[in-house]
Every structure is written in structure tokens, then in C-alpha cells.
Image (spheres, one colour):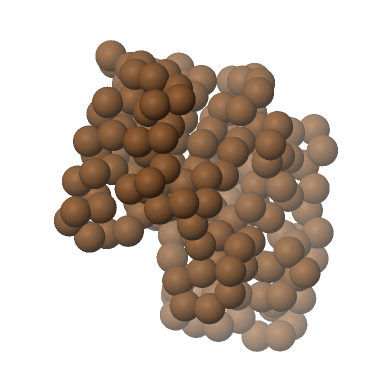
Length: 196
């Protein structure tokens, strides 16, 4: 299946039965990885109400391997992601934090468009994917619903330098926004941490 194919109604129902009804009550990292692999295999995501959407904006499997490598190398306890979309990279971070037994708010996500509908908005699908995998908003991760240009300086002010182990920048892909994202993430990452 290619990313531009739309699943037939029967296939949507089959995948919906697996993905949209999944619950990872044990917070098993292998479950989270399998959930992500299935999402990527079928290019399918589902809204909180179970409506099918074709996966159109996501990080790739090769990128996930690089993220996993960085998380393992740094023994990351605190991570940050600029850009959320359907949450594929966030699932990699969730898998790591579950596998490492990290508790509390271990992952911070910045995205002003997670819950709106329409072009460039994500209908809450990324947050729902994390919830289905047992990674709970407010308990394991936080969402900052601001642009990164506003959110990152505030995080630096509140959390100070050196609190961050790994950061992934995949937000608004304009030079000025990306430059600000890199600047602030470098300011927050600890010595030996990694910024993508």
C-alpha cells in the first residue's frame, strides 16, 4: 500500500477494530511500537470518534530508528517535540519513556493546531494515538498549544537550561521559525543531549 492510497471501507473497518479500539492499559512499550508499525503500514489514523483519516503527515520509519538511537544513547528522561500532527514521532518518544520506566511529565509537545479541524489541523488524532497507547496527557506528557516562537522562550524561562535530553524539531518548516526552534532547543538541552 502506498501513502496516497485510501483504504477500502472493509479495510478501514478491519484496521479501525485494531487501532481505534486499542488500549494499552499495561503501558507496554512493545504494544506502542506495534501500534505505530501498524499505523505506518496502512497509512491509517482514526479520530477520537473512530473516523478514518489517511496518514499524510508523519515521520518515517528510518527517522524513528534515529530517534530511538538518540533516546537510548542519552538515556533520555525529558524530551521535547516541536510539531505533533498525527503523533507518529510522539509514539516513539512514548515507547522510550514506557520502556525506561520514566514517570511524571517526561515529554513536552508544542503544537497550536492539534485539536482543530481543517487544513493544517489534526482533529486530536495525535493526542488520541498517545492515549490509546497508555501515554496519558497531564500524567506522562504535556501539550503546549502555542506556536513554538511563543512556547519555547517560556519553557526556557520556566525550566531553565539543561533540563532537556532530546529535542525533535518538526514544526513549521519556515526558516525563521526553524532557526528560533533550534536556538531555544540548544539553550535548553543538557551537555551530551541531542537536537534533531
